[in-house]
Length: 450
Image 1 (cartoon, helix red, strand yellow):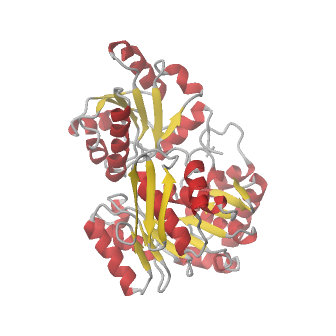
Image 2 (cartoon, one colour):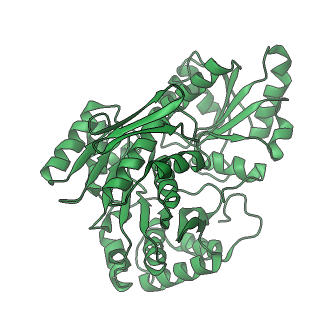
Image 3 (cartoon, helix red, strand yellow):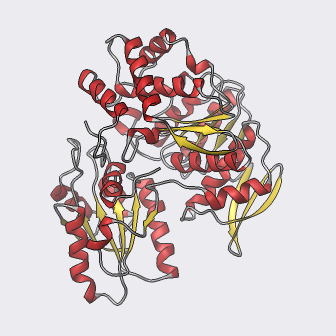
């Protein structure tokens, strides 16, 4: 399996390719295998710097990016684990650097860690995600840093990262329906799984929740475990005022610039990060907050493409955005962001969407009813789980949108380009519905994450 968009296969990618040929794909929610493997490796998960452990349906990546930016703005070094990657496996592991910006893991170091973990597993039954999680703990325990920000892969209670027994803070971001076959078909069931990362007596920060049922479960779990808890809207909050972000918690109020990441939903994500870093025991100044909000980066999440290979296929002066959000909750926040862009600068909105079959396409598309002119549905390269573009277009029609299946993203851009002369303004184009599709687009465009 060659990483998406990578012409020369890296040494680490070759090692992972071997593992993918030996072990089943996907998730197998249990902690027995990862616990056994880590024991053979000397329990590196017990030798980490203070951990900010992050779960939730939406906003995990943005929260992680804000936490990293905030810590680095204060001169702290921070390791970061996220998943999945967009283009290259290395994106999952950012190694902290003292007083500076962390870097994606070096390929030789990464490959050696994968080999060590695979050897320690000795061919026993395991998933590749579990092996890569053990790699996280190896890398983060053997490179010094002030903090480790670790994002859950799926759920929480039985996620491979949940062998962390002593987090500096557990953070639960917004919860909505996603991964129902694994986590349950009601938000309260999903919330119970996410709440599984809470540890007795350890601080918990709860992000902005759309559903009261989810918040009730999180609050009752935190109370049962005697966790000091900070809840968005109760213990900390953020809102826009006169083009500025006003953040407030029990420690005081800060007048800050709006986050560099677009979309009003990022106000709550930034606030949760500020409160989480404080709960983890780090001193946070207003100067740190300002620097972090202006410098934060998170590829593939409402990321605007300003140049690159794909721009040649697009209409002149078109706005092109990519976003990997793929569930109904993500659809709502992305649609809100597009509506806000429309208020500031009217443009016809076109969607280019690809999705995999574990998602709810109708729920995602409903958020764009009355907002999008048309949806072009495309395949996802190399994915056995992709939804056929014809079926995806029917789902868009069921949600009240006009849709058409296309063979590629470039074909969809050309179709929009052909119809651009009929529009009074250059179009605004959103490409998304899957992180895998976004990864393909960034690779094809020549702008992979760094």
